[in-house]
Amino acid sequence: MMLHVPEVLDAAALERVQRLLARAPWLDGRVTAGHQSAQVKRNLQVREDSPEARELGDLVLAALERSPLFISAVLPRQVFPPLFNRYEGGMGFGSHVDNAMRGIPGTPVRLRTDVSATLFLSDPASYDGGELVVEDTYGSHAVKLPAGDLILYPASSLHHVTPVTRGTRLASFFWTQSLVKDAAQRAILFDLDMSLVDLRRDVPGHPSLLSLTAVYQNLLRQWAD
Image 1 (cartoon, helix red, strand yellow):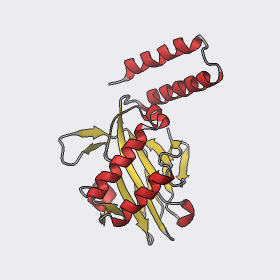
Image 2 (tube, rainbow, N blue to C red):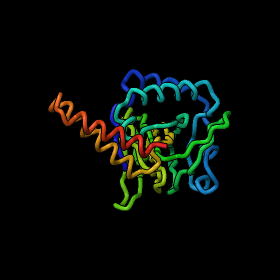
Image 3 (cartoon, rainbow, N blue to C red):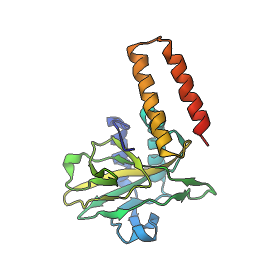
């Protein structure tokens, strides 16, 4: 399932992000790539152990906690500390699949990458190219979102970033291990939760809300690991 989550970061948060990125140390993006990905990856990344990276990551994680749509779609058990990249001057990232497991630097923790996420940080009118292209059984889907918006997509999918031919594309990217490993089960829970949101808005107090909420919670109890 691909899902657009709008306005994860507001204007004030984006301004703070831009200030931090302007003074952050940048490294060759291949530092976090696996063997296959390193052959097709051409970008820059904020150094993970820098104070700016930690502050930026905390800002994004706090914003995700305030996003009901993100929580409903992903059902996060653990979110990998967000990383930050930059594409410019023809940089791009060829077709690849994300590693199934990721170790959190400086800890013994390893998480399974169920859901990949890209949080766009640049005005799309300020650069050419830089589309995230995700491939699935229905074809290829090119994504280029407003600054502050997030795209979620299966970590198992092939995807690439087209070369940036003008301007600079800034983004955050990260992975989430879900409480529900199976993508089809997560999609069912998400659809049910969104229906409950609509019902609470349109027919508040309807007696079916209680039984449907019980169905949601019992499915989550059965499928969560």
